[in-house]
Length: 232
Length: 210
Image 1 (cartoon, each protein chain N blue to C red):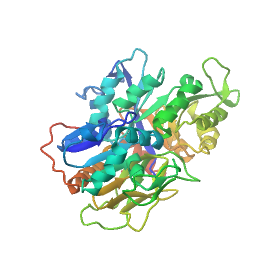
Image 2: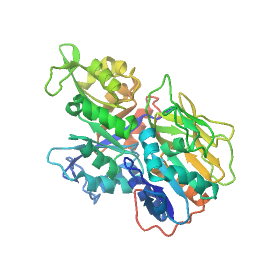
Image 3: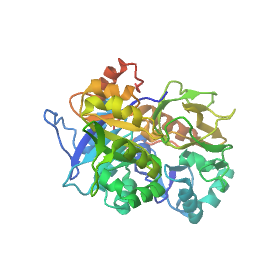
Image 4: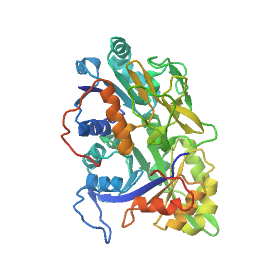
């Protein structure tokens, strides 16, 4: 049986990790230092989220790839195939395309042809509105979230990174039907372990959560109580 | 000196970092004439098989690699590299593989998530005098296709059905998992594999996470 993936999220701006309230500076250093620390704390992978004001990705990606021995992904507003190729060539294992980029069919399709499906994920932000789960897309009307996820799968996405607001209703109403897709769904948690466990029990393959005081090992211990398989 | 075959769409940074931390020397080779004069040749990748095939043919590696292997040069295929070393793949059914490792690569599924991107426990089927015990270890996989296991397969994992994780035919070794992405267990297996293939590490010059 595959392990449920436990994935801490680090926010990054202009090549520097954005430290969170209470995060110990601890001499972890740049992105590679932080990433190594998370690996030692039991992470199965790391998701970097690029904040506006970024730039100069290749250098820090190369540094992380050279030091880390677990996979890492980057969610960023990739402009085009060349932008994506630069990150992949530097050592990125997986790119997470933001929904507006994914809505532009040529980028996702070209990326799948160039890098293959396993290395491409698409972020979906679903919001519960008047009893139905919707996604807001750039330049378009809100779409039914499940229909949108199915469309992304058809277009070649290798994974769906799903954020749902509110999280409390998401496991049964969104994750469970979404888990019928042929591609993996990773649930993006705000940090509530009970809700994350529910999403995993309803079929999510992994959970991404804000890196913070709780280590991946402590998440695994908490999730193991629910009978979920995790890598030790 | 380890030779890493370099295709455009594939990054070698992680693998270079891993072997460098172990103390192995490596060089990139777009073409066969850029290869080190001796030592293992690694073919790795995670992208589409067709484009890797086309690049290897254009660069001369497709013709040269089987000859080098026939002359005793150790060859290690990782992930897509294993698929290319096999006899053929459903991903590109009209093209033959390099044929250094018997068997056909088939698409994973149906009934499971594809791509298989994650960590799976590995089960050893056969003992090998050179390779270490890998029972109970977890390795990282990122693939849509996998080699069907045979009676010669050293180890397997299961994603819907069993698939080959490790093959060794003479001095040609194929590994489905990304060992350089599989934590300390994967790194230990990679180091042992490179040692079995005749490479000796110098004292490590850089440090990583492990």
